Length: 567
Image (cartoon, rainbow, N blue to C red; front, side, top):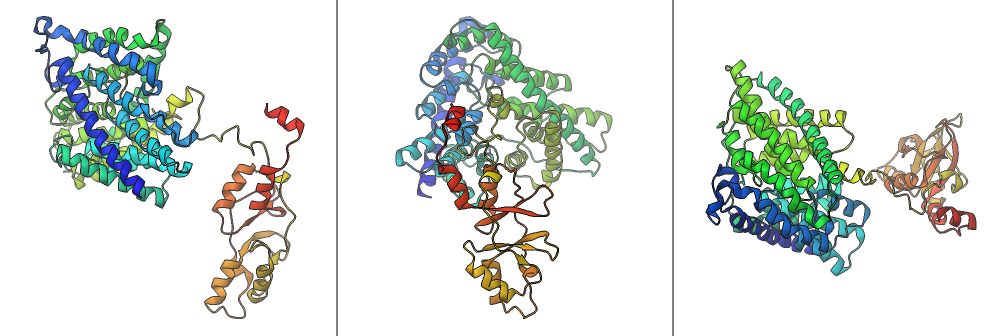
């Protein structure tokens, strides 16, 4: 708990420093607090260049952060979240301590120089690196290290966006991918501390100023559902285009990697020259879209432009997140959809902004397939409960469409392209290739389902593991009985007619050909210290497996043939 609080405080301070760096580099390289809202204005620092300075801003930024990333922390390139997911799933939560500093500088320079990326990926990686560094300093166990990494991620999101709930669920749903009570409590603590620090620095206001919207007609739900389907398609399309452009950049570039962001910055600058609204994160443009200040054609142009600009920024080696760009795309899609529906059915459509808001969450859900985070972040942005139901409808449909169209998310696809599948078991595990059949023990004494509980209690009390199988009168497998269950029933005053059937429990299915790793998971999640092993028909018992038999398999002497096969 103390470490979670400390990580949350560090993430909050890191978020303040990171946002200050973005503001400083944006003012330095563009001359404006947010150039996306400035149109084709000139940079007052170099007025003689006029609006043509945007050709050079990404180049200058690339010359600074390209060598920095290449020399000190190559994992700081890109959008950051996949690297944290990999560290938690495969490296025990270990992240190099220099990543926090390098990622802060590289992402702030990239965004300040016009990179069309967000700040959520960087702050997740920054906060996670702080949590990992503290864990390594204190020498905590791997399971706690992972929780500290998640605490850093949640704290960074919470402080940066003034969204403590979104920070918690982002960390649980995408980083830990686990909702245990202990880890949830620690992540909440870190998020609260980071939010308090962030609010002390930035004020208790949402990072987007959006008007209140509601649902005015029940028929709007059909429109929101259709928007959710379209958003799922856009989310998957964005993912595919992002990595297609990254592959194209990899194919085209033949020079040193440190120079790639600067040279590629010329292409990005050309795009910014045509569409300056793509400069940086672009929150003012997003707010204008939700407030209905753009026509349908321009909204679609901004949607296509953002997909191209974000993909190009990542493809040339830029550093920044894809969360904010997906919100931007969703706002453009939703506002265009709402405006179109308003033209076709003005009496039932409702305000355009409601569709923009729901589109934001739905496109993110379609790209990242994180529906809980998408719902929470939109609720925290609006504070409008009346929009929750249509928001949930659109986000769930977008997630379903995304799952139907693509196996991977925008985060997991980056890892899969490297040959890493987080859902696969590690091939190097000691029990890889070992089945239950090779380690199972002989069957213990079985209980008949008609046996009186009082008599069965004596047998259970004498059993070495406090758990025994239960068979029917015909010898078919029925389940298991534990000494704990028998004691609880007897303590409650079981009558003489009570039989073993009253305490029958059906544990996880384990057969002779089950992998030992899966059997161990079933053992850990079971109520007793042993599990029955069934034959292929699942009706008869073939053997018995316990923690001791698994331990014996892990530490048994290996033969020369096994060692050679492993080599």
